[in-house]
Length: 229
Image 1 (cartoon, helix red, strand yellow):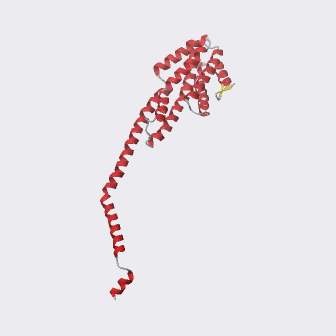
Image 2 (tube, helix red, strand yellow; image 1 turned 135 degrees about the vertical axis):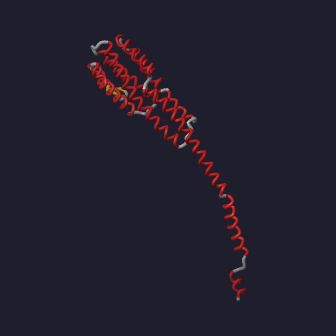
Image 3 (spheres, helix red, strand yellow; image 1 turned 180 degrees about the vertical axis):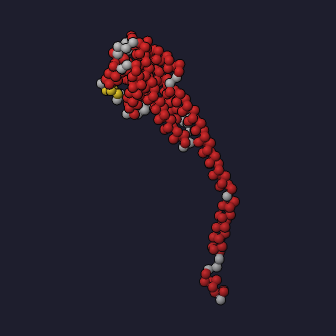
């Protein structure tokens, strides 16, 4: 079954047959599936939420079919969460690079659209936990404990997504302030350069005016030649 650009059946099958030793393979597969789905649509907060929800449901459905014990299931679900985190981290980096281009051009980060974009990056981790938390409320009983342990552990340690988002916000604001300062400094230098050359500019204009007056007030060419004779 394909939903939100994700082959859920493939994820379910993979988790239902996996062992704890295949954790890294699970993480990589979930990361790639999540990232591919994110790349296939506009990167809005709502679309990110839909993708995370779909991946969480598929991972849970597969884990519910796996005969492994609770400890191993928790490890597998932890890898599913880590895979989504890795994909979401790249979404944060994509936002960051796009916003860096605006900041470099001196766009004020306090503008309405920029503030909204920054706020979305800042709350990416909250959206992550909120979406997964709501998605696992409806999973079967045996998975409740493992999922609660995964979410509790990750909230204590923090996600790569959250760490990157905080760093991105801090650097973007600093870059924006620097760009605005440079822009103001450049404008002031240009204005000062014009003022420094103002006297010379006026002199040039005055010379041009004087030459024009001299030409306009001189005798006609024929008369001049006549007098020289």
